[in-house]
Image (tube, rainbow, N blue to C red; front, side, top):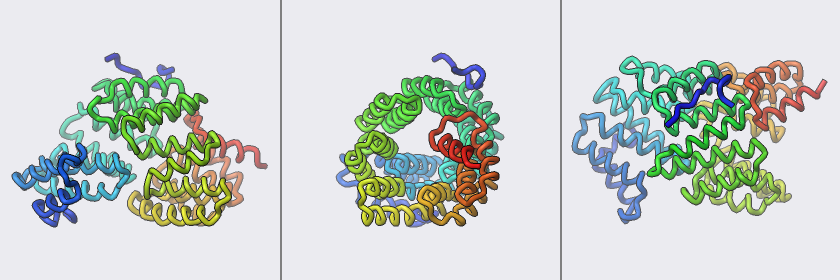
Amino acid sequence: MKRMKVALSLIGAGVLGLGLVGLRSMFESKTEPAVKASKVDQRILRAMRVIEKMPNSAEGYNQLASAYMQKARETADFDLNTNADEAITRSLSVEPDNYDALKLRAKLQLTFHRFSDALETAHRAQTARTDDHDVWGQITDALVELGDYAGAVNAAQKMVDLRPDSSSYARVSYLRSLHGDTQGAIQAMTTALKAANPNDPEAIAWCHVQLGNELINAGRSDAGEREFDEALRIFPDHPLALRAKAQARKEAGDIGAAIKISEREGASADAAQMLGDLYSLQGRKDAALKQYEKFESLERENAVRERSWRHMINYWLDHNRNLEEALTLATREYEARKDIFTCDSLAWALFKNGRTADAKKLMTEALRTGTKDARITRHASLIQQTP
């Protein structure tokens, strides 16, 4: 497969403490009959059996951690990542510094928004080997979230050079998107989709969602929505696909359909916020209020787990609530990471608190990559137009 240049100038213990026998029995009781267990559930059970046979080997714990992380991604039940973290801790306790566990830990730290920790862990893994493209991908992700975009481009290029696969092209696509190259992002994500593992329907669905988002950014709403439909055909009830489809229906003015789709997503903070907004558009104030209360309850848990209050901050700012607290938290977020979305949140918080001059300075940082992100560009326009 032809390699793709990234350079922007060239691109158009806890649960484990129960004991593994008891844990496996508990898990199997939730997945009976066995023939109906999903592929990832079967992976979890197989890993537990490996641990039972070889409790002093890291292999089974690593398999278990990986399977739990995949199930969390597929179901949006991110509490499962706590199980994965415990499995990784056990793996490192029986085989300190084992390479696969370090890779899994860096991946999980990214999920928990511990970006500096993830970067440190990835570099620690590289003391053993520097030719693993997965680790270069983790470094790319951490640098992106910390706002070091030049470093992220270099890391992504290294990743592509080592192995030009679906995950490499997906990162190229995201970097292009961040730098305002929408057509280049579409091209790279199309390549990522073609290179995706045909035996991993969740990964294929994820690629369709990302491609759909980029098509919508390019003004091709119908084509983008078809990608969401295809994602849901391949992986029914995929959380990101449902969210994207609901947003697309909302933008099209089809509020009823957007509500039905959001209700399918289940008990997530994002679904609750979306339903609150949709019910508000229908004038159903009491129903909207219940969803907003549900969102705040769930998102507080997420914020503590992920050490990030960005979603809550943006919710408060968009709904003109707790503006002073939003500014305090946005300032704290900015001290930890300087990516364009954090800069945008702080700029919007400053603006909402009447500090327009300071907001304009921060918005310059948010726009530094040339992004065409709709939320950022909308905020920038409002802030710049205000004297």
